[in-house]
Every structure is written in structure tokens, then in C-alpha cells.
Length: 250
Ligand code: FBP
Image (tube, rainbow, N blue to C red; front, side, top):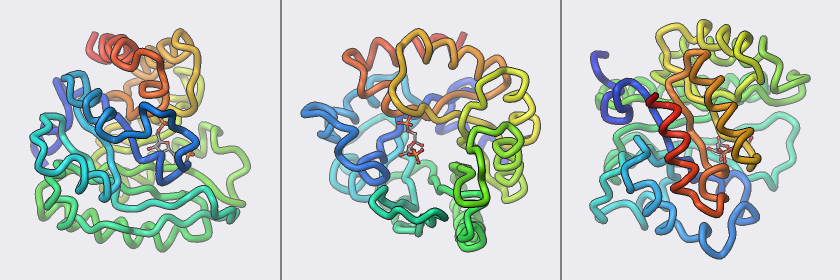
């Protein structure tokens, strides 16, 4: 397991640019500019990011063969927001082998912890974890408590449980939601043990709120962020990315 994360971290810290929202939310997240994957890859490639997260289609059609220096992380499962099921399931749409063929240096997978389909996702993740281990690449699991059994997705107890499940299942990094305060988030990080923690960005917030949150997340012991909308929905994506990077690597 030595140094398995070194290709998608810098000095043990991470800043990933997430761009799988076109699948998860649809183009309503985008404007004329950021609807174009090429524009996002230009942002991701300017040196501040330690990874860009894409679904397979964009990895194949925009990343592959274009000599981008930013490490590619391929998201292996996905779903749309058009399905309004209370208990979500996110099926695998890409194999580890296919992700590697596009140049992936890591793979990601969402588990909706607490969903009635949790067992299927855990099983699928187990297989992916094994294949990634054989290929020598890290696995990031999006650990999202969701479904009828989850009363509050932000409940620190539930987020800590989700982070712990990531450790139990062998994830190298878990991506979780910030619980809103340093004390409760420290417990989330502790619960993840040797599995590293990154935090999802969420919907666009005022810059100062987002930067303050970033400081707290780092103070609590996370290794960084996997952020999308708060960067590429900004009028100046590189300016906010630089501010976030300065906090992460301070
Ligand atoms: P954002 O920073 O834009 O929130 O992206 C993080 C992310 O995890 C994406 O990878 C994913 O598409 C999205 O959030 C899923 O969010 P949700 O399921 O909460 O709508």
C-alpha cells in the first residue's frame, strides 16, 4: 500500500476538481462556458489540482490522448437525478480496466450508505476494490448516507458511520460531506482511521463561507477537497482554486 496515493496527492494533500455533475444533476448546473468539458480540463490542468474526476464518456472523448498533466480519476458508477426513488442505487457503468485504458490513475465509486440497495453497491465496490488493488491504483469512495432510513444526511453520527464503512471496505480515500463544525468532523476523520478523508464541495456558496469551511475541514484532519461547482461556477475559477489550494497546502 506504500505511496499508492502519491499520484493523486501532493505532500499528502489533495485537491480534486469534480466534473461528474452532468450525469448526477444534468446540464442545469452549467452555463455556456462550463458546459464544455474542454474548459474544465483547462482549469484542472493549470497545476493547482491533484486530480480531475470524470465519467467515462468525457474521459474518453476529452481527456484521452490530449496530454493533460492533471491526473485522471474515473468515476465508475453514476445515476441521474431524474429518478426520484427514495432509496438510491448507482450502478457501475465503467470497469477498472476501461478506466485504465483512458489513463486513469485512480477510480471512484459512490455508495449510498443506508439505502435499501446498499448491499448491491457494497458488493460491487468490493469487486472494484480488488481489481484496483491488483492494478495498483487507489480507490476513492463517495460515502453518501441517503435513503428512507437516513433522516438527516448531515448528522455527524451518520457521516462518521459512512466514513468508517469506507475504511472497513478498503477505500484509500473517502469523500464525505462536511458536518458543519470542527469537533464533529474530527470524529469523522478519526472514524476513517488510515483511510484518508476529502470533502465534497456542495452547491455554490459565497467565497468567504467556502474558504472558512475549507480551513475548518483541514484543521479537522482531512487531506483536502473534491470540489466542483464552487470552483467552475465561480466567475473566476482559478482565483478561488488558488485560494483553496493555499489553505490546503499552508
Ligand atoms: P460539488 O462540489 O459540485 O458538490 O461536487 C461534488 C459531488 O460529489 C460530485 O462529484 C457529484 O456529482 C455531486 O457532488 C453529487 O451531489 P449530490 O448527490 O449531493 O447531488
